[in-house]
Image (cartoon, rainbow, N blue to C red; front, side):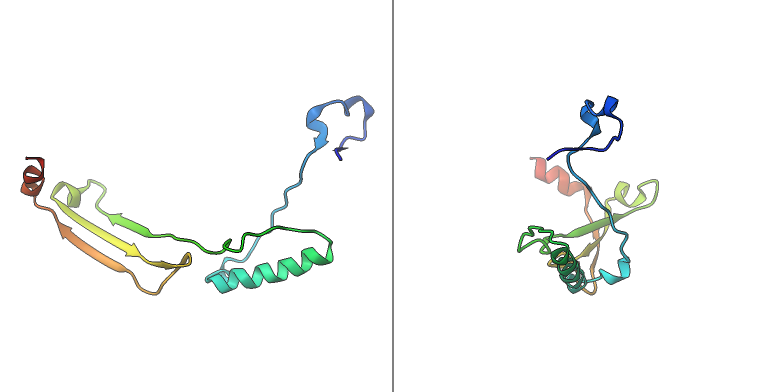
Length: 120
């Protein structure tokens, strides 16, 4: 059922004056979401509140699962490493979307003659 938000009959014919859905945002403390468990605890509390309000929300059973890999490349503003055939890379591994302790730091040298050999 559409409900007009205007109290003025002369504007109730406007399509933009009809509420089709509502969206609410909640500010959350990020330090409570440093692991999958933190998100699950929040969702458990939120679900209980929604149930008390007779609101239903469908959630995918795998909604908190994630496959993420983060790779960062470092260089100078003038790309000195890259221009001299070096690569400095940091790779962070994730478990179900949450960072595992530690990371992999790699420093590589790629000789320019390797590119020439690959083309032939």
